[in-house]
Amino acid sequence: MSQPQSPSSPSQHQSAQQPQLPQHQSAQQPQLPPHYYYQQPQDDEIDLRQLFAALWQGKWIIIACTIICTVLAIAYALTAKEQWSSTAKISKPQLSDYSEYQNQVMQFQPIFDVYQEDGTILISKALDKLADEEKLYDLFIDEFNSSSNKKAFLENSVVFQKNKALLENPENEDALRRLYSNWYQMLTIKPEDSKRIDGAYIITVSAETSQDSFNMLNNYISFVDAKVHNKTLNNLAAMIKSKKYELKQQLVMLSKQAEQRLLVEKERSEYALSIAQAAGVAKPLQNFGEKEIFAINLGSDAIKAKLDALTKVKNLSVIEPRLEQLNSKLQQIEQLGIDNNVKFLAYRYLDQPEREISRDKPKRALIALLSLLLGGMIGCGLVLVRFLFNKEKF
Image (tube, rainbow, N blue to C red):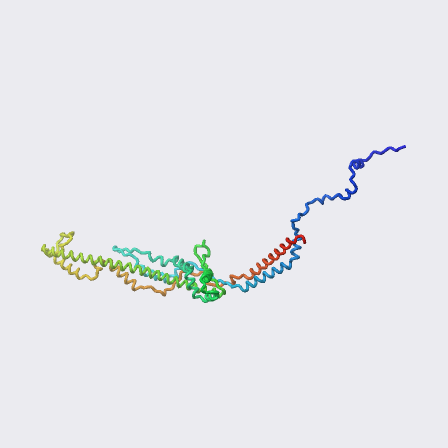
């Protein structure tokens, strides 16, 4: 007898429904774990480990580039021309700095004032601008910045002449202009702060050594002082000369007017004398002919005396009193004169000239550090370029 079949389990039922793959296909396509399915790296992406490996393999190239750049930079820093600067700080002058010059100017003040007939005096302001602290200070700054003054100073500077002698062709105008232009930039005066009211300026002079820059700073300030001194006194002398010429012209004009008045008065007196004699008027008359052209009220005797007095007049100031004022002013100009040895300054020091404790250039430590970084960058760049061209080897 055949035995009854037991009911099949669910697992057996599912396995019976699944199609059976051929044995060779199941061997070729094994089941893969779920974590296998992630994005594979593309061919054009670079692994950082490969980069570091490439840099490590090219370490000698990097070291060589760094050493070469550093050595060249240090050699340049040691052989390049040094530049040292000396500085000073100035501001507007105080009254004590230019009081002697102001006294020089003020002694000529009466010459410019106007004396009126009623005794009042009109004070002239023509000389105020010559002794003004702002004008003096601005004049110093302008003279300092003047290219012609800088050139004149450099022509007599031993330091500059040494540099000029080093030119390959000292007669080359272009080379000379460049040399002068470079040195002009080493003589500078600039405001410390445009917002400050005191108007302080910083003076800077540079040269190849600290001592040379210090000497040139003092010498150029003295040179500019002399220029300001001469120009200021020349301006005063020019104004005095102009005023003197003006007074002489006024003197000539008023003298001619006085001569004409004297001549006219003589003629009137002669006519009046003739009329008085014809009228038989020998003694003065009251309230008679005072407004007549030829006044005979004085009488012939008085008119004759007047005519004799007019004939003897030599000083025209009797006729024109203003001539006395003009002559007085001209005499004062001749007596006073201008003292060319007067001492004054158009500025005052806030900081006296001093030398810097370190050179401006070359900055050797900075050059060495930058060359070290530059050499390392160049070396790394060469190694990375080689890596990119030989990427398959890594």
